[in-house]
Amino acid sequence: MYSSKDYKSPNAVRWCPGCGDHAILASLYKAMAEIGVAPKDIAVVSGIGCSSRLTYYMNSYGFHSIHGRGAAIASGVKAANPRLSVWQATGDGDCLAIGGNHFIHSVRRNIDINVLLFNNRIYGLTKGQYSPTSPKGFITKSSPFGTVETAFEPAALTFGAGGTFFARTLDVDLETSKNAMVAAHNHKGTSIVECLVNCVIFNNGTHADISSKESRAEKTIVLEHGKPMIFGANRDKGLILEGLNLKVVKIGENGIKENDILIHDAKNKDYTIQLKLAQMQYPQMPVAMGVIRDVDEEPYEVALENQIADIKSKSKAHTFDELLDTLEQWEI
Image 1: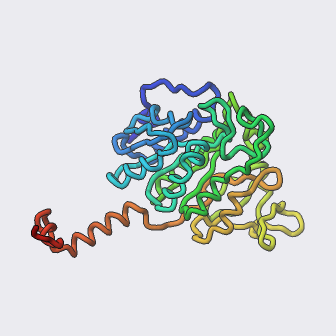
Image 2 (image 1 turned 90 degrees about the horizontal axis):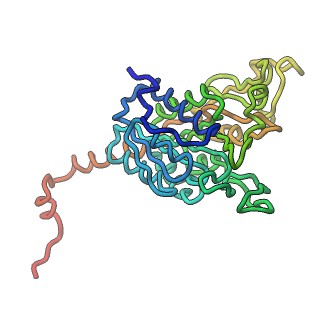
Image 3 (image 1 turned 180 degrees about the vertical axis):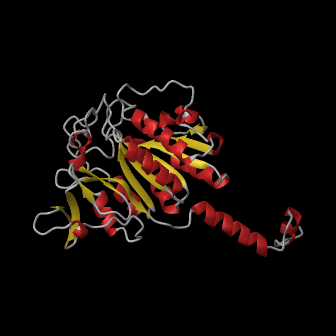
């Protein structure tokens, strides 16, 4: 019923030319068209930052909120009107610094919002300070001698907070981005999609090690539930479990066969293997893309509606006056 253009607003997109955010927005348009939700049934909420301007570029309801508070606003929107498809656009600074507490508690509550977490490892809008995901030793305007802080891992934070859905994608891989967003929408509960994006002005090439078209197949692995974890330009590499650790092997060498390769289980409630996959880093291991975790748990707004319905069914008071009569009263 809908095409990508139905979700585009008439506003000019004001990200820098070459910014990775453009590709994520294009993937979101395609995902929305595939999902088929009417624009009037979508609400996009954002905080502050370059990524948070996405609200203006969607032909839907939107709320450009304050710094770090996008999760709180999005949670309120979904709780007030559960039929809406609610999306949150946020960045590694907006989400994981000032908004970190809101982030982990929205994940803990498992409210049905879809979070696009743009990660370029830098504060772009405020002109190049290090962010919570900047690597240790990274030199920026606010860390001229290199930051001494250890970077946050969005996946570890999500899993530690009890997250039920986590996916990762690259700005240059539009197909994987679109598929991850569709899966996020279909998941009932908080969905986190970490979008690795490039900032051409203040952190150009931050994901260049894994994003080049020529070598991406060798340095990343796109996971699909129920399928073997195989990657490589020739589809001849895979992952096995050796003791407690994941290991890269080559199919056909040392007696390794395709049926020896691990099968991806995104539905397993025990996230031990999923977290190991999410924490793989190049060059030791391929970086995991696609849907890493997708388990079923009761969403917050469903539990809330069920609780209200249960209380109503048992209540003897059906009007406000009847409710007052049930309360303890005094005459003065």
